[in-house]
Image 1 (cartoon, rainbow, N blue to C red):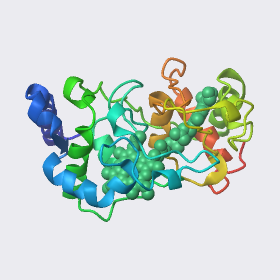
Image 2 (cartoon, rainbow, N blue to C red; image 1 turned 180 degrees about the vertical axis):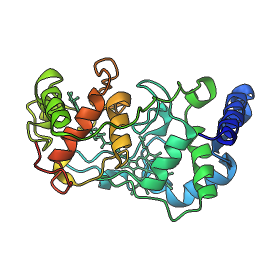
Image 3 (cartoon, helix red, strand yellow; image 1 turned 90 degrees about the vertical axis):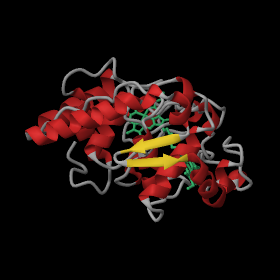
Image 4 (cartoon, rainbow, N blue to C red; image 1 turned 90 degrees about the horizontal axis):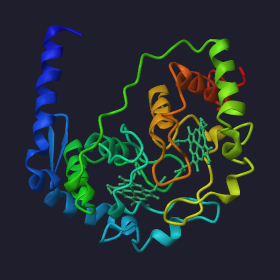
Length: 265
Ligand code: HEC
Ligand code: HEC
């Protein structure tokens, strides 16, 4: 990193650290890079684009909500009043950063009815983040924990894949839920619900190259350490040492039918 970049990061860090000093105003705003989102403008956008699924009160009870909940466990629209988010760069139990919510809105949630809103301008998406946060007092009363650090990715060698397989199949028993081949059909799968009582089966790794919370190896790494809060998918932050999370990433890629590493296990 050049000295200029370090200074720029420092100034950004100071700005972020200073932001929560005025909690009331902060809760009505969002800060994503150089963007400041405004909740009032966000409300108008929400009423136009989001209300049908997420509902006027943000409780996930929009008039279309019953139609997006499938018998196979398609998740209902998020209830924003609990302040619980699946896709975060923060440890389990923490609220997300504004940028986490912004990224989810931009990306959509793969394999669910939550579409990508990348067609809206970045400013509009920032305004939506500011508004969505007003549904939960957690954003007024809590600060997000520091983001999880992601070390440089190790090489996806056959050894790394083999170590990941051992973790998945034996040490951490991911297959209990996800199934030995990653189809989401492990013995515990039929018994899994989210924290609001909706049936929620484990993710089927063979369903594509993307995950709910992103598609890069770094996104995948983060999922193991953050967990998907509000679901049965726990955080493994206390169990994964050193490069083990990268070993798991490399092994999971072999379970994806269309990955360049498919079948290398
Ligand atoms: C067609 C229905 C539908 C519409 C319209 C919709 N959503 Fe969603 N949204 C969902 C569903 C379903 C989920 C839950 C996905 C899951 O739990 O895996 C969700 C989840 C989310 C999440 C939570 C992600 C997380 O990390 O937990 C956010 C944020 C979100 N939506 C924002 C929005 C915004 C902003 C709009 C409007 C611009 C919008 N949604 C419009 C269906 C919808
Ligand atoms: C107790 C059951 C359970 C165990 C054990 C479990 N998972 Fe999960 N996992 C789930 C559920 C349920 C979901 C889907 C959550 C959702 O759709 O919101 C999930 C989702 C995932 C996802 C998809 C995340 C995304 O963004 O789409 C990955 C990757 C994952 N699990 C990896 C693992 C790995 C690796 C292990 C072992 C270290 C593991 N899981 C252990 C239940 C479990």
